[in-house]
Length: 167
Image 1 (spheres, rainbow, N blue to C red):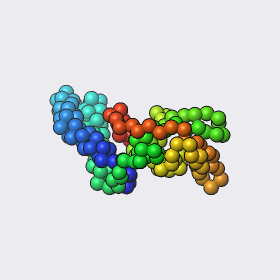
Image 2: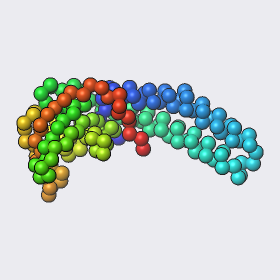
Image 3: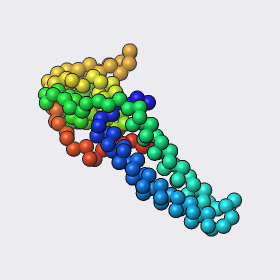
Image 4: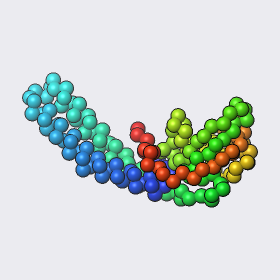
């Protein structure tokens, strides 16, 4: 895995693990007990659904623990005048003649539909460390690239809206 995560990402994952172990696990076990008490297990849909939910919760806990264990912790601070982690940037796409706003985030938070661009995406890699007014080439692959101009950089401290992507 070896995802690049910030300390904030790790804290959120640890909070989710704790919630799943203390709250969700108990609820899932109780649901399995109730379904089992209904009688014949061979035709008991509620029992199989409850077991599936319980297993899904346990799988998510293992996934998060493995992510934390194998994470590469990165610093989320950056210079005030350069694009860095958790910055909101306004970009002008020359090819399309339009401006769009994105927030630079870690790989597990990336969601381009919500304007969250990963530092490992071609766009994120290209603009990281650049300043307002700079024209940057974004290399998508060996055959295609495009240019963007950085129009504005805003430091975004509050990441309470972000969630860890679920698989």
